Amino acid sequence: MTRDILDMLEERIVVGVATGDINRWVHTYTLSHGAAPAPLNYRGFPKSVCTTLNNQVCHGIPDGTVLKDGDILNVDVTSILDGYYGDASRMFLIGEVSEEARKLVQVTRECLYLGIEQVKPGHTLGDIGHAIQQHAERHGYSVVRDYIGHGTGLQFHEPPEVRHFGKPGTGEMLAPNMVFTIEPMINAGDYKVEILKDGWTVVTADGSLSAQWEHTMRVTEDGVEVLTG
Image (tube, rainbow, N blue to C red; front, side):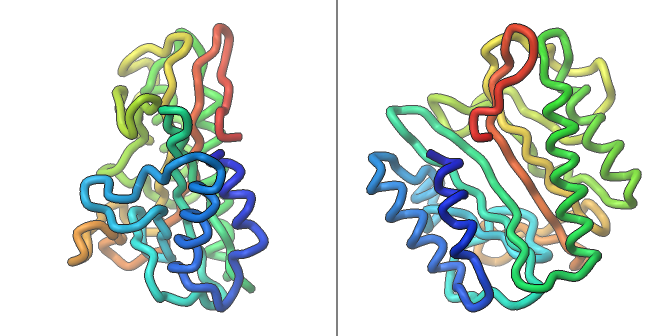
């Protein structure tokens, strides 16, 4: 369901669209397919999806902001279907995007999949974080520390905490049927962040661009199944 919603948005998110339009599309599609949007009213969040733009890191609130040529946008969708949560986010490039922004988005996606490659029984959460951190920093980027991946399933956020930085061989060992998200937030500048006055929107402290990709996955007997892939 979550993947289908993001796929539905692929051709709709263009120059001139407002982030509030994206919220309306996600809300309508989710309900019409028998699911519920998890973000809506979660701890007071006012919308059905997070739309996070340019120097915003996560938890952006959809509103009347109109997408412009050169913007980069993260759309974070979480659906509840038959009592279970599915959580994923995807980056969208709006119009003609700068090479700087395009590279950040690409490297962040690579970080996600390098993290996923570490998911198998006997590996640790630290192995995931280390793979992501090494790749991001190799390109001169930084990994956000304040917001991390998480277990999910019967609740929006469950154990374990999945950090996108760390040392190999440290942290909880992975075992079959663990279900969690990996969702690296990578900044072009420093990793420090701030929260805007709306109480939700997180931005880079230095105003640099930020990107994020996310999947929900299950540890299998011999590897990983990406549930939102």
